[in-house]
Each structure stands twice: as structure tokens, then as C-alpha cells.
Amino acid sequence: MDYSRREMLRRMGIGSAAGLGLWATGGRADTTDGDPEYAGFAKNLFKVAPSMSDVPSAAIVDGKVIQPAREIPVFHEADVVVVGGGAAGFAAAVAAARTGAKTALVERYGSLGGLFTNGMVLVIIGTGVKEDGKFRLVTRGICEEFMLRLEQMGPQAITPHPGTDKVWQPTADAEASKVLMDTMIQEAKVDLFFHAWGVDVIQAGNAVKGIVFESKQGRQAILAKQVVDATGDGDVYFQAGENYQQISHAMGFVFRVGNADRIDRQKLPKETKAPYLGNHEPIPGALWKNNLGPRGNGLDIRELTRFEMMHRKSAWEYVQRSRKTPGHENIFLMNTCSQIGVRATRLLDGVASIDKKEALLGRKREDAVAVSGHDGLRHPEFAIPYGALLPKRVDNVLAAGRCISCAPDLIDRVRLIPVCFVTGQAAGVAAALAAQKNCTPRQLDVQEIRRVLREQKAYL
Ligand SMILES: Cc1cc2nc3c(=O)[nH]c(=O)nc-3n(C[C@H](O)[C@H](O)[C@H](O)COP(=O)(O)OP(=O)(O)OC[C@H]3O[C@@H](n4cnc5c(N)ncnc54)[C@H](O)[C@@H]3O)c2cc1C
Image (cartoon, rainbow, N blue to C red; front, side, top):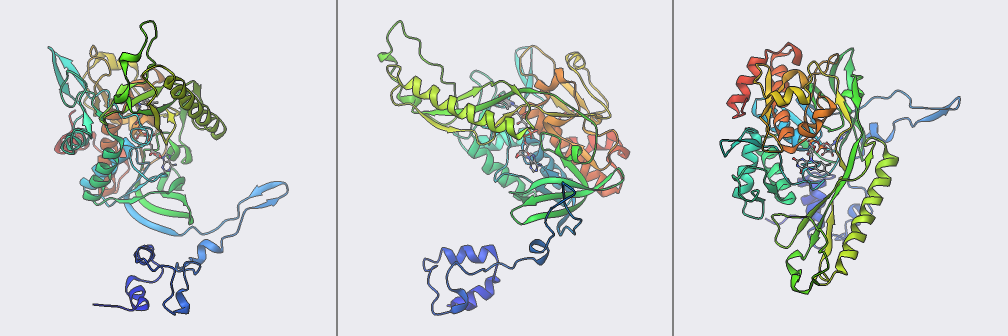
């Protein structure tokens, strides 16, 4: 059936982003068909919310910048809101939704995976242990499902570590991983909001009741019974006033080199050493290089800016220098990570904490909600207690991923990608159960969390 442009727009709902998109792809977008109401793109097709345009601005009062009190529009309501869509936040959102909670996920960038995908870290280290010469996967549940489903996407989506089991320290492709994360989030019916930066919590005493986020449309609120802090930096528990310690760590930068398959080693003179260009990854002809980088404060935007520019320049110059090596003329800097490699910042002051000594004992714990493998082959698995996700004072918040409670000497194990997946899954299940029971996460029976995690194929 043919519609007039006016009728078409009416049916699509004038002002909807979808409507504008369809109109724009119609090929005649800059014509008006004689309709003065829609004279090209200069016209405002979107309804402007009065609460957005009329909010009082900040003012200088007695030499101080003061933000006047104002109403914040409620954008969404959920049982569980997860802030941060890295490995931990992705797993938390999927797990909460699969446990039956109405779940929202808020991410400041436009794709999921955090350091894993946008930071181009890619090598999934710490998935298991080696016993009697055999590999045993311990980061199961959503982490295992994710790796197996990547495998089904084809050889360019994931490659195993040479000479090992398929899910032992594989290297994943960032783009395949982002697409799979989108898919699994959609399958779980999670309400995902990209381009939304969590900036505050809604609080009544110690109890958190939701979050405030900032976007192109200003500040809006999401009301929720439970909040999972998967920001990597503990932004939510920081905003809620929970205690934490902040550590500094090397801030790295990953880049990829293209045309590695066109390097002509025959041309390399005997006495000349070939430049180190990184490891092979699933994309043919691409090499992956991880720069360790100097220590810094990953919460300080001046420092982050300085590091970004320094790393980018150094990656460019390194590849240009390498191109001068005989046989390497065709290589080029393919891309650099879009998220700088902040390894660790805030660590929660949690109800429980684990350190390296405890981890090396490898003992089973009745309060474990996640288990980590090791990045070397010599160590046993170690258990992460529920208390490591639980703030000491603030209620209705659970931490997941690299900002949970642990001693600084164990952060290099806890922050690994598969460990973030499993702590994320645990936080998601606990948040959903607390929402269902209308209780705080600290009131939950940890054995019930473990039962649901096992139903979701987690290994404990
Ligand atoms: C250079 C480098 C190399 C590494 N190498 C390896 C390796 O080889 N193998 C390995 O297993 N691990 C490695 N790691 C560690 C691992 O990549 C990360 O620790 C892990 O991916 C962290 O996951 P996460 O979900 O906890 O946090 P992140 O990946 O940091 O995810 C946090 C997410 O939250 C979003 N976010 C943050 N704040 C807000 C906010 N206020 N509002 C909304 N969204 C927000 C971010 O955009 C991001 O998507 C490396 C890390 C670095 C930096």
C-alpha cells in the first residue's frame, strides 16, 4: 500500500528516531514534496522534553559554582540495573535477566565488552587449571557459553592457545565478541542503553534506589531495586559513599599491525633483528601488540589524556620505524584501542577480601560464588567469596569485575577477563534474587545464590 509522506510519518510516529532513519534512507530526504511542515532536515522532528530544556543551569554564587535543585526525569524502571557493559557487566546483565529480573544495562560507549573488546585485550587468560597434564576449565557458565558460541561463529572469531584445549586461554576477535554480546543481551531481553554515563545514585540513607545517568539528553534516572557496579572503577559505590582503596597500575595500550603476512623474512639481513610486532590473532595477517605502559591514575582525566596521546604517538612511530626494516615495508598500523588500558583503580572495601596467599592455598569455600583459574599453569584454582562483591555499608549495590574487594597483590588475577565474567554472573544472580525477595543482597542466603549459579552452569 502506498502512503503519502505525511501519512507515513504519522504512522511511524512523528519525531521518533526510527521514523527519521527510515525517511533518511528513502533517498529523497532533502525534498519536501511540497509539504511546508517537513521542509528538509533543518526542521525539528523530535519532541523536546520540557524538563530537559527548562532545567536551571549552574550559577556562580559567592564565588562557588552551585547547581540548583531540580527534578530529574525518570527514564526507565527495572528490578536490576547494571552500570558498565564490560565482560563483568555483560555477564551480570545476562545472569540477572536469566534469573527472572527485569534488567537494564547502562554503558557509556557504543559497544559492549569494555577493555576486552574496546581495549582490544582479546586474550582470555585464566580460564582453568592444568592437572595431570590435562586442562580443566573452571570459568564456566556464561563465560564458557560465550567462548563456545564464538567458536561457532567461525575460525576468525576465536583461536585456541597453540597446543591446548579449545577454551584454554583463547584469543577472541573484538568485532565478533561485540556482536555476540549484543546477541546474548537481546536474547536475554535486557534493556540496553548505550551512550549513557552513570553519574550518581539515588539513595535513601544507606539504601540505593537506582541511578542517575548523563547523556546527550541531559540527566535522567533509572529506578531499580538493585544496582550492579560493573564500571571497572567502582563509580557506583564511590557515588554511594562506600569505602574503597585506590591503587595505581600500569596503564597500557593495545594496537594491531596489518599486513603481517606480507613480511618477507628472506629480505632480513642476518645481523638484523626483526622488530617485535606482537602475537598472532584470529584475523589473518594481523598482529596484536600490548604495550605495558607506565603507572598512572586511571581516574584522572588529565593523566588519561596525556597517556592516550603518548601511547598513540608511540604506536605510530614504532610501526613507522619497523617499516624501515628490510622485508617489513608493507606493514601498517591497523588500529589502536578505543579504550585506554586502565588495569586497576578503585578496589571495594568489601565484607570479605582475598589476597594472594589465600588464593595460592586453592581451598574450596562454602561462601564461594565464583572460581578463577590461573594465568600460569602451576597454580591451583581459587575461590572468590560472596563477601568480595558486597559493600560493607551501602545496601542494594553489588560490585563485579576488576573493582571487587581484593588485596592489591591479587588484582592481577582478579581482573582477568574470565574472572570478570564469573564475578559478573554471580553479582547478576545475587542482584536478581535480592530484587525478587525484596531484601538487601547481604540478607541473601549464599547457598541459594550458589544453587542458582549451578543451575546456570557455573562451576563452584
Ligand atoms: C593493557 C591491558 C592488557 C590486559 N591483558 C589481559 C590479558 O591478556 N588477558 C586477560 O584475561 N585480561 C587482561 N587484562 C585485564 C582485562 O582486560 C580487564 O581487567 C577486564 O576486561 C575488565 O573487565 P570489567 O568488565 O571488570 O571492566 P571494563 O572492561 O573496564 O568494563 C567497564 C565498562 O563500564 C563502562 N563504564 C565505566 N564507567 C562507566 C560509567 N560511569 N557509566 C557507564 N558505563 C561505564 C566502560 O565503558 C566499560 O565498558 C588486560 C588489561 C589491560 C588494561
